Picture 1 (cartoon, rainbow, N blue to C red):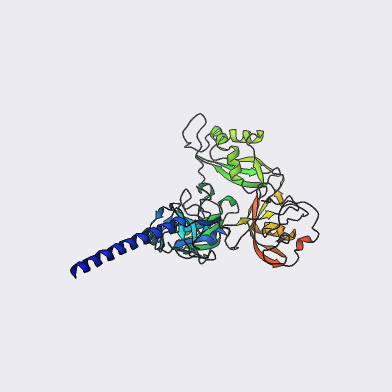
Picture 2: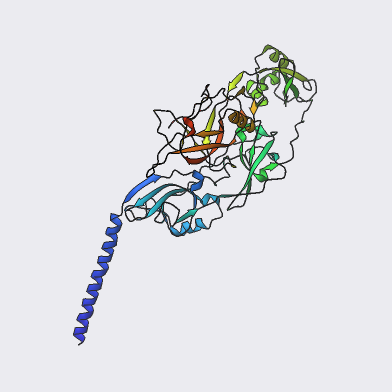
Length: 462
């Protein structure tokens, strides 16, 4: 009886052992046979692919069930990032892979670039699932009661950004130092809070220097206008920059000038400082002072050299400036999904060229117009000026040719409607933003277009 029982136990263990080996072998073979059937780049608007970890799945170098996949971030790490209070721990999804198991994996990168890899995303490419979910990295905030502001402490901190840091992948500084723009009036056009940190940012535009336009941390701004009258008659020289008609275009101060023949700053009114004044008032100085005016300064002008050479502390000298010639301003046209926030990612439209471009939802026909967008070179223009030009030129609505869609016999075309534009200076490429609306029927671009020029846009067929 006991011998029979022992033999039965041995036999049972042997069978169990064999079963265990068989299960492991089957699992290993299944993993080894899992293959990627497709791995493509996501083409939806970049900001629509901001995601956050759910903490239920780890991050791998390849889809997790594919042979050779290595762990990039454990499930524990992903859970910490899911509960993080830092925007740096958001992700941007940019590829999607499907496997022979019918599973979906998204490739993504953390906003700070520290982590990059594939995470399980469910079984459908129509929505994020599994280890990630869609994230709103910012949320709308109340606009300030006073919308004209200035940099609170000009310098390298609290500069303008393309987006609040880490709320968009590769958000970057627009300018790295705001010292040059200390006295510029900044107009707030939008407000947002970082969802995780709660910090408030304002989008500002600078009419004098459009290159500054961007998002600035709200505490880095002030409504108090800087004091500009810091003239010291013992060390400085005032400058009036006048045109040929004697009209003052700009005023400036040449500050902290050294006495002729010396290297130390003057300490008395009436000190000859012509050498230092001539050195400081170079062409780069003039370009900064005259930014946005449409005028140019040349130190080499004989009258300017004479006035600078004779300068004494406490003096007011006159320098002559010249009005620039008219200049065409190229425009680049973009499609955007968020018309209220120009810092959001936008997609450059493609120019349709008959016979060389395949009609599609983003191949726009740019018609000929009667005139380009032009003005005095380097003179400032407002966003309203550009919108007015586009509207008058009938460029406020643009259309694609008809194109086909798989599985449908209908004719389609996409209509783009102007929603906003950027300010700038004449002669420097600017941007116009449109929103898309797909329609059926015959495209309007089959109608005749206005005769004239097509030299107003920079978009190319791609």
